[in-house]
Amino acid sequence: MSEIWASGRSVGGQDRKGIVVTGDAVSAWFVREIVPLEAILMHYLRHNWRNASDIPDLRQEVYVRVLQAARERIPENPRRFVLACARNLLIDLVRREQVVPMVTIADFEAFGIAADAPQQDQSVIEQEELRRLEASLDKLPARTRQAIALAYFDGLSRTEIARRMGVTHQTASEFIANGALILADILHEAAADKSAKS
Amino acid sequence: MTTPGLATSTQSHDAIARRAADFLERRRFGGWSDTDQIALDAWLAESDFHQVAWLRLEGSIAHVEKLAALRPSGPKSNRAARDSDGKRNYRRFVLPLLAAASIALFAALGIPFVNSLLQPPDRSFSTDIGGRSTVRFADGTEIELNTDTAMRFRMTTAERTVWLEKGEAWFRVAHNAANPFTVVIGRHRVTDLGTEFFVRRGSEGMEVALLNGRAMLNTEGALTTLLAPGDDALATPVSVSVTRKTPKELADALAWRRGVLVFRNTKLSDVVREFNRYNQTRLVIADPSIADVKIYAELKTDDFGAFLNLAQTVLNLCVDHEGNDILISRGPRDETKRAARTKHGL
Image (cartoon, rainbow over all chains, first blue to last red; front, side, top):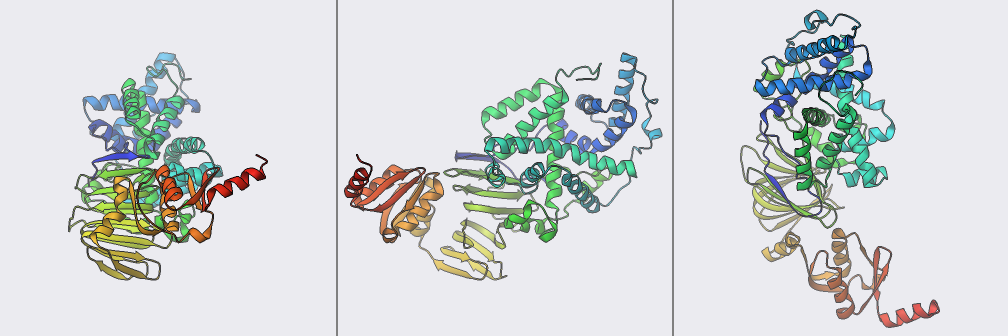
């Protein structure tokens, strides 16, 4: 299914020119294939790296390696490839810094992550994902949650969000931007919790 | 960066992510200019760390929005959805919409993630007070948003739906029998059958006027009305009334597309209400006895000067500024002014 979208022209007021469907094939592949694997990647990193505060940086480093490799050639099995990159990164770090890892860095097959996932019913999974996401949202501070709901669930404008929250545009912007960061984290964390339990 | 040996990133993940979030916020929620786009492009080109942070954030948010669209309607959706009735409807039309091809694609993924590029989330478009904006779609459809208007739309090869959340818009729809075009306002819907029309969301309900083609109006009360060119329908929760307008009247009603308001024998109260839709400064009729004064005028939507001039010289009304409001009352203004001055000891 492709989106019908061409261009926007503004005569005044505000415009959403930024609505662009990216044309870059590698970026598109990355968003489609790699970002969804974050829960698995985080799960792997957490179990193989002692210092939890390093994890987000490690994750981004893995992403960069994957992106750079994909520019040469798109890997056939993204799941396997991401985990291989993560493993290589950890091994590199251990070698370079003479850090003793908390366990021998697990091969991902040994680690119990199947490189190929079984097929599941898409709509059931999405409902489940949504339920977990909402549960995570409920744990957030009320204002943060409100901003996220208005912006990303209801798609309201910044003006409208500012009005409903009773804050300035500037403050609303900060809530919305911060909300995006939180959403990206909890989306994958919620999934990681589930894969850790199963 | 706390981890030694992570090669190339000079900035912490946090700072990069924050920057990406700022870009994303501005791009999605307004105020995005060509300069911003250039800044984003430059920032992305600077480092692969910037790129992955951007892609991760964008992909995740697109996915959240897709999930949000799956939320059930009604009391179960317990968040902000409840105070925006226009939103509830869209969930009903969400299809569990994956073509066989994309299902096969997802089969390879452990956490099935909706391909945001194959199935884009709904887009939003809005204008501020006084703003006007045109959107053109690749299928030839054109939408022009009038002042203070917000809409959400889903334009795909399988579905073309626009939810008008507030305000007014003009549509010229490229007809496609296989993929009808629908405008939803609250519980009312207009489905085009090859059409040029405009729609306004008012306090009473939905107003639809058809310029060309044919369209079908389905209202909340499940009434179906077929509209012909010239028909101006007002749908409330309980009724639909259709009046016939001449092409000239319709052209007047659409003069905002030229940045103009046309009044022919229009009550002052209606003129003021129209003007106020386009401007932050509010006109207020301070004297109810002048509300029914009739006016002929063609005015720019933001031209207070012309309007006030008309009010003072032609209608001999009195105009006073009070904070952000402009009060209009009956003259003679000189005496009123003099009285006010005397009162303040001037």
